[in-house]
Length: 162
Image 1 (tube, rainbow, N blue to C red):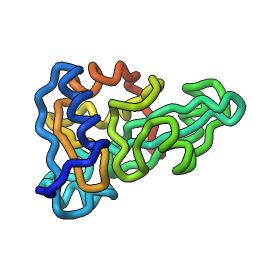
Image 2 (image 1 turned 180 degrees about the vertical axis):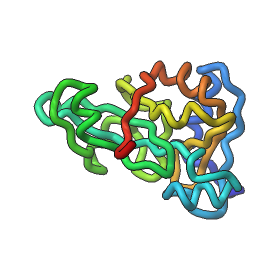
Image 3 (image 1 turned 135 degrees about the vertical axis):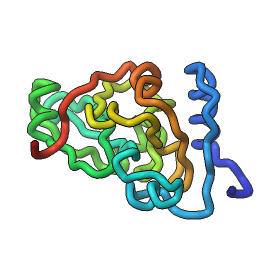
Image 4 (image 1 turned 120 degrees about the horizontal axis):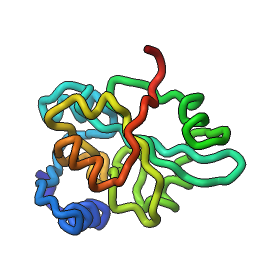
């Protein structure tokens, strides 16, 4: 456990409480910035890691959050179909400005502004999944149904292949 909780991690704890979850946020001494690092840190399969990816509408500038399982890659083409416009990955400055979190620690909730959230249908196949909790060394676990409820997300096929 780290010695001092960051304000970003506390925001996630507060958002979890507000959402009616008492899930423990684990602050670790190792990096959980990548899906593989996160899986190794908590002893789960990489498919159980929630990658929070921010994309923006090229025309509208709207920011969307896509929650993808740690093994798969996001399909921008599928996302463009879902949101009705061309999309691109959001840059780090835009992600921090609109969510309040830095890339590598962006959680699925607690953002500065409401975002439309899409959830990789492959995440729903697990009993327990792990998501970032506001810093590149903090995670929390939850059930996929809780992720769906707390994000008001839309489950969709958003990854490449298959």
